[in-house]
Length: 229
Image 1 (cartoon, helix red, strand yellow):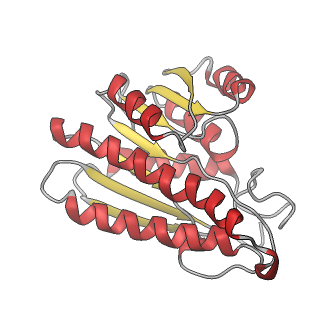
Image 2 (spheres, one colour; image 1 turned 90 degrees about the vertical axis):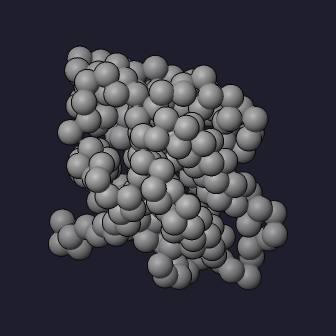
Image 3 (cartoon, one colour; image 1 turned 180 degrees about the horizontal axis):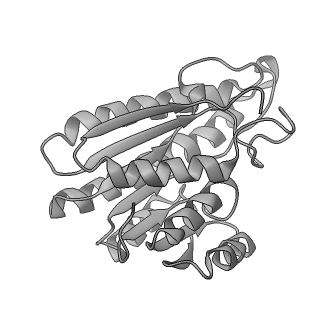
């Protein structure tokens, strides 16, 4: 598992899967920096991390502000793991989806992820060590009714990951992309109430994958819950 003293960045750590990821890494002894736009949510994450072997620090961050993302990664230049998790979703019929809706989703889910991945890759390749973990989605493999913008963004994100993986070959830096199906978080909202995987279960698997794939340059995981659960 993650070794005590390792530094881990988790974006979008104020709620949902990001919050569960921060707690899971802290439980394994990591020094976690959690970011997000919700100060109250980050305080809640800090409370959940108390009593674990690791520690939790927080920083307000909007991933649609590239300069701030780069500054933060440069400030924490000794990251062992960078978890690119921040994302948004929207449920809207295709016919009612406006260009502005697409642009809003792409700013966070694609451009925000791109800038974070790029900054982390630059830092880690200089040190020839580290792993970038990208939380994508099973929506990157299929269409989902009333979620055109989200599906398009996740297809693009998966393409970015596969391209970055090729360019990281031989650098000592690994990339893991995790593509879960529905998770019981605010992101799922009213689309399928009561359904989806437990975020703590997904977080535990992500932490394990980040810790046990150090010799694998690229790992792509698709996660599906038991429909009977």
